[in-house]
Length: 310
Length: 310
Picture 1: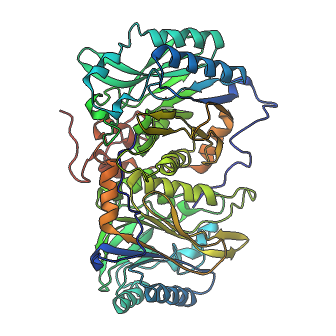
Picture 2: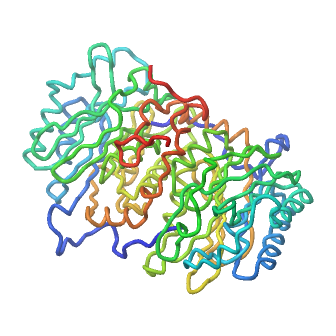
Picture 3: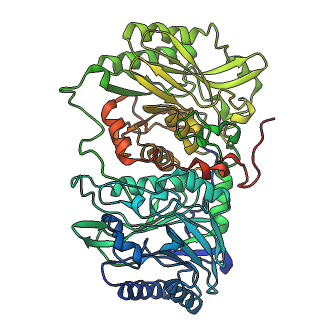
């Protein structure tokens, strides 16, 4: 079944008759990040400025853009790359940039908090204000992606951030495969879902290409929650591992509005009207018909044993 | 991030070296259902036999296949079409057919239980045994889809059925838009997700076509749960409402293995290897990394107020 939906598309390239606060232009940044920290920051800085010049309001760089994707190997020396949230120089850099350009920037970084290390993102508002921190909840592990060696599973819970241009939800990479994360962020009021990412080839299975399932699962979140979704991935080869870019932005029907190639460096923008997105979500009625009284199973790990708070 | 996956595909058209119990061949039935009950049952019967002759183990007819899609209008006379689960003649017909052909058949029907009416499905094993009942949990409402007028929201909770050919999860139409339903059935042990469906044009918004989002959200469930998904839809025009078929089966990567057109009557089959499907799910590790300790939000309707059992 599907209730009737408004006839307009959820993307507006013509803002005629709408107020500026209704407009939400989202951009993804895709670039190689194999160099030293300063060069990677300069590269992201350059593309953020480029996207802002084209009118982007919210600009998403890739995951852990300060350096190479170190979880490819298990090497204790990489823990030295982590930085505290408080006084973080990279966050300070992009806070100044966000204020200068009046854009929202989610900054993904390797966080150290005393003896714990997290895969985190800090959302910076268009005023330069640091709105808060989200720590990656779902931590993967497998050949070439040894994140459980580095990152403690996040303890912040899923978060949304009320920015100057709307409420944004940010999940980090592996979180993007979890319907629970997308649903929770939308229930908390997100108007768009953003996923900084680092994904590429599979060292143990060279003929497996995960690009299609990677995009499909997020397109599914877009439809199921009737909400736009954006993912920013890195490109380039690191120690034989090839990151496939394919950064994209989907509208709330799951149409890929823009998509970058597997190798091109750059940005891609998509224009949304917040009022139309909310109107379409109401027309579908997905949230009207949810059955939390039947969802207890989701709080189990095995379908039966209820998880208990320790 | 994405852990390495096995190099084999999750679909096997060559069963060489595998035991019969590892093989699972799923079929969807797509046909017009505007005629009287007897003619519709005969039509579904014919196509079930056709699919079984091609080697199908589990054969899925569309939603409410005994008659026209009556929720298009709100008319109390349609309540007379409902039948009790116990002694249901249509279920008895397909129980005999399932036993004869040694196939599993989920039978969608309009159920009356005393003063309550449900949109239900009864799963029949290849022995002819009726394994149980599931009542549609998510009930839509909108122009042309006035289901809230007819159906009490289901009280069975999400269910899986342990059949002769594997554990199957069955959701009913609008349930197919809900990640909660797909995740719950997979957590409960489903090896394939089946969705009998009745979906078509939108009377209030003729230029809106929901076919793409309809398929995309289920493809998302296939990837997120690393599980094959099948949907069977009706075709034909009923009172100006056009049902668009497009029944399909996707593998656990979200590849559409088979898809019928918007108008053709018939069946489509896909072959899976249960061991490979389970192996791929383990390789992804989605269920290893879930965080039920962070999923409380999913049991709320507004993101904050916890639902309480009355």
